[in-house]
Image (cartoon, rainbow, N blue to C red; front, side, top):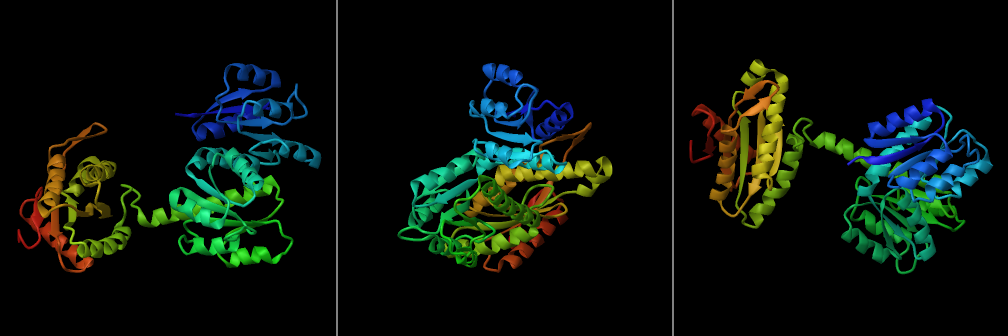
Amino acid sequence: MSKQLLVVEDSKPIARVIRQIGEALNYQVTIATTLAEVEGILQGKTDFFAATIDYALPDAPNGEAIACVLSHGIPSVVMTGKMDEATRQQILAQPVVDYIPKENSQAFLYLKRILHWQITNSSTGILVVDDSLAARNYVSQLLKRRNFNVYLANDGVQALERLKQHKDIKLVITDLEMPIMDGIELTNEIRKIYSRDQLAIIGISGADNGMHSARFIKNGADDFLRKPFCPEEFYCRITQNIENLNNIEQIQKAANIDYLTDLPNRRAFFSKAEQLVPQYTKRNMPYCVAMLDIDFLKKINDNYGNDAGDHVLKVMALYMRKHLGSGLLARLGGEEFAVLMYGTDEDQLYTKLDDLRRDISVSQLTFEEHHIVFNISVGLVCNSTEKFAKQLNQAESALYNAKENGRNQMSVFGVDD
């Protein structure tokens, strides 16, 4: 369901740009051009997810609209053409999400980032560690304005427990001076468990000693803030660290996920399988390695076009998730797929794969005006004592055997040769 965005702006060109930004992010946008309009809208509708507020309106030249919108508990970003320090302090003294000077086009790019993160931050947890209740609550309030999931701990030991309990935590904000375990010790302990690619740490301290920032960084923290800090700087540091983590995640996904089917690619499949196979062997768990190939995919491309062939590949991935969802699935390249799965016995694993093959063979895909039928061939090897790379070669050998014997069938290495 789309989020509701209230845009308070008397400039029609600027309101139009903000509307476009909001709609691009799937917001439903309501525009008000005066304080009177804002008050009228909020009398009947207050379920806005966020708001952007022009500081100066024709009937509210000194930021009166800000207090009006905030009084309804709506997270708000202030847009202002005034750059003086008094106006800045007036805005920051209120519980706004942020303020943005209307200086140039960068202002609207920054607004788009804020509105995007207001939606996505709800899936990100941040842990605040401080032995001061007042400090914890202050930082927590700042983070909740940005829609983060906030967890609290009053010392390092409790913080480590919170990390075990809440897997959505991507950032830890820790004070230096704490009993039992201080911030430096906590940072060291966290880095024994989480790399910088997985979790960010920001150290904070009210001490005047300049060496604390260097100590935090050298012990594994990503950033440092000195208390008391400005909310504006606080938000910039939080956003930067969360964005860095998300960028790393996207790079890793691009390196490991097949762009078309969203399945793991060959590289990721080999890496994970080489970890799992020794575990299955050690625990005496039955498992199979299978290679699956779409029969005559080239003919589908030739007859219906490459887009149709891509559609078949995507559907193949859906069928695999449906029948083999508990296994490690992958697209190796082209029309070749693979799966590593474990189960209660060899017959059950075989049946799952054959059910997949049968289900595909009796299905008919609709693509544009075309009706497409396709089949798959499967080769598998079960409980081999060879290294994983060799097992995949054995499955491939069985796959070739299935194709040579007429396709749309399964072949087991060492049995159907």
